Length: 370
Image 1 (cartoon, rainbow, N blue to C red):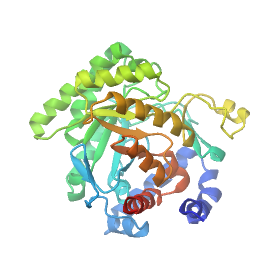
Image 2: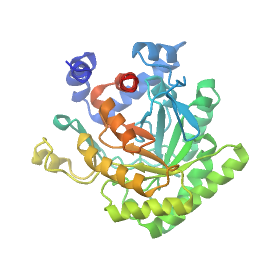
Image 3: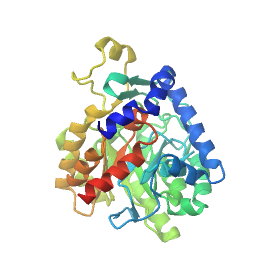
């Protein structure tokens, strides 16, 4: 029996099957967030979380640690944006075994997101469809939370990326100033800034991936990151997150723009608007769910293609964070060998449980030792 089989048949599998899967996905997510916040807030909570899930201290550097985005971390696996939109529990998530956490997506203005229901499971495919619509409390609220986290010893050392998006009410022609506002507020607390122009759930957002519309946005965010660097005396790297649905020539164009603007790198990829024929879910179920971004193992092939394409067009010192369809330690290792500097996951943790990041960190150590 593989460790993956064990996880699927273990206590979390029972909890998921009999409790969590019967709850609305958004309700289950809120319960999870409250549990993490409660556990982390207990005296000795961080140590308790690491002991409970047998995870190494994510702040501890090891001989095999790689220095990326100005920091060295034991595990190359991080949590993608979307799980902790408002930066409520980034340190607790690091204590589960992630090497870094990307909070957000956050917008300049607080917004409720799209009407519910807006999150759906495709259990047979171990996939998710969401059309959340950047629901968040706004950049100012996130800045306050991150400022509090950074005042702690573990928070000062934590690798916490901040993913910023466009407010829904902001016109596309005003997008650059919208992103600039968020970047100015959040750069002081961000290990890096991720510019999200690739969510399918904000009308017109993906149009911003065109080079003509993307350039002023990236220039505005880089300007704010440079200003923060002068004040803070440290780098605030800027990356852009792109969709798997871009054509190859558009991926190349974004890579060239990243070089010209001076970005630290690219995050690839976000969710997809495609509905592959290989999905096990019934077509009627998919049709009933409707629009939204699909995530899960079916993204792996395209995500790997985009990774290889970017690696062949970006300089060696450009950072690539590979995201989409990552489930196993071997998946992480394959991404690193294909040229990724860091790897992110999200959907797999919904199905594998909170022990997933720590387990993969240990398995990666085992792979490295072979």
